[in-house]
Image (cartoon, rainbow, N blue to C red; front, side, top):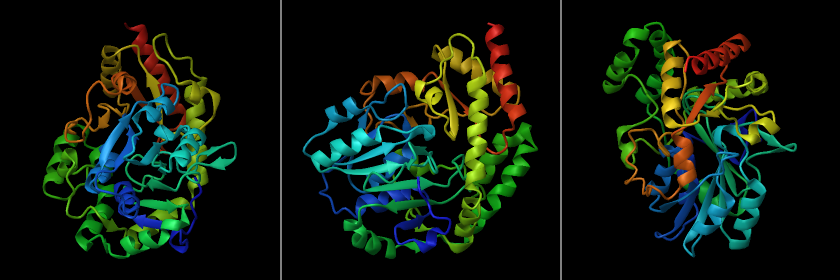
Length: 376
């Protein structure tokens, strides 16, 4: 998606504490009825669902397309009612969702479209950036995202008709407090230290989190759909400057992720492990490289094996509303309502593409996957 190198200079950009607050900012500025429904996909994070709940609306889950891990257009259409006011289109892992189909359908139905580009900053389709087709788009600069500044998000407004309402809402928010800002500045140092003490890494992280010195990325209240008292905040200048500095190097970041993605694509994965067609047909700067195993047992065994070899593997998105501790009932997700998403969530493994992954490292990961399958 298009994003200016100096975001504070754009009247269409609203910098927030994170992606969740950016989604909330958009939803609350629409002045929708309290019983409004917001359609979003299963196979997502509670950081997408929570702002819908915080705004007082009902999340309605659509199933996903196996080829893109994004919303399935036919499932979306089947979920629409006269209360549907917004569709959140998520570009999962940086793989473009069905933008044209969703936007065209929603315009006919007079439904707002918010593109979730948390994984897709800088991704283009046919030379056209993601994030400019709907009424607005959000990005996240959080942990494991494209920029990965650990904190920050933004709302990019395309529909000028709601600009005044957003400005009013945005102008009433406070900046993050000094103590919270300090903790976010301290976090990168803590993460470096934790990497050097693997034996006590988890226990130390939990301890530091409990005393308020370390941010794990999730707050207890958010696991239950509740709004933390400091949820709606603006990003202070010192943290925004980090975002600006990283944006200046985004082209290098994107090319690196493309290169690592290509290394994975060049590998012949063993039988039983599949790659989505949408990844094979387009070279993309993926924020994660998803592979799908034959079943949950193989997924779990492979993850355990790779982690024993010192390879970090993430589990986006298991369960269908991530992370594991999330209360699905409070997220208003009905088990069995999105069978494809539920199936994929039990079989997916994400390979890293971040700046710390070298070509040699990516090849080694592929080699270890082959070793694992050969041992079975």
